[in-house]
Image: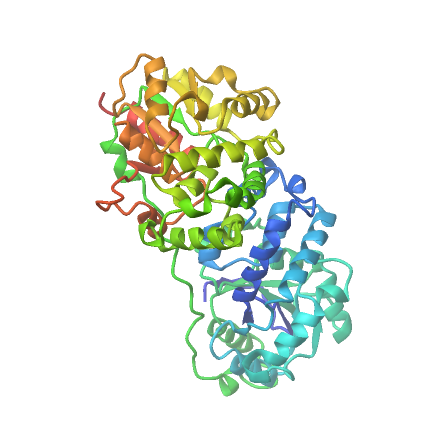
Length: 562
């Protein structure tokens, strides 16, 4: 047992959260979230995302940024499988009740396709719940799930054995507000004719659950089945709203009840030891996400004198316009004669690339997963589709530009403090530039429009896609940039970009390649897209996940040997 408050009273009722506490519905939940989040723009919710400065934690701010840019869950959330949709909506919309209501409705519409995938969160959950009933403790469920979903899942889980376990269940559509509003808990207590006091326990797996318990005036018990680190849990709460106990398993819950029974022997119908089931194993936790580790590469890098940046998906976010234009131009591949010029599947770098080629060839559009992931640029798409056929790529870029004119104009900083980072680099005496496959007519407009005032004064040089005969991944643009700066193309020139084409261009130019992992690929995926084989030898010199890491990297080299 992690810990508990010495003043806790034996419970008269145990109210359980559903998902992440009693049952595991992660497969269905994450499937529904991944279907719902790409709809944020159509739902009018992108502009209602909470400003990062108002987010409760740094992790929440990163989540808001990631969803704003990519319209999908951060890969760490998908890997850890620790948070619920309620946690996510509270993190990204804050107190905007109407935005959360729209999001919950869209989620529910998607969830109807997936719900029913339900299993006990911990082995032996049925046996533990039966023991609790034998003690004379009343049991209830309180959830933000709709009634149609809870009733079906309750009848399905553990082959239907749970149906008679609970004295009350209250769902989101039984009240007018979602958690953390206390209505759902107060409705349970009203149904059971019990007062909202310290003998009513709410057992849940999230900060939102504990906040709901606090607002209802009852005892909050944090179920740490997801295996959060103690310091992480402590960081979420103030002394006022902290849970009365933190339990890792149902074994911990039985231990706590046995301790309270020794203090108050008449608290339960019988002794916990008399009904306690044999110990069951703790909840199974997913394998941890393997993060790319950039720190060992610091000592190997040459201090930069010039830093060149990619534009789209590195310094700024223009993904909406880019994907709209790609959608518009792919059906023209037939008339442009490009369908027959795509690479053969066996020439693709990865199986995923081969599948993308096959899908575009058959349907003349992007695979829905590519659009949902929002992780690759049009340049990467054209590289995957056409390989070394430069003429085909030029035709595709020209067709893209025709459609991009209908969508471009909205441009946002990729992260909140990009401008401050660029200004800081200039104060270090570094020369800065932008290298982009975007045509000049688009780039100059976006450069002047970003953040309302533009960033033109921040760069010493810029080279666009139509400034050279060949675009990235060829090194021509990078070489032209350093030529304009009258600086040699060597490893003291860093090129920072988010794509495989950026890495290839930097390595071919003889420069240091800094891979900006804004899309948050994990290490296995980075090893897949940068295999380091004879056919695909180019790998980045270093990987950074955001600009705070990049700033630390530059400073580490600044104080290192010249």
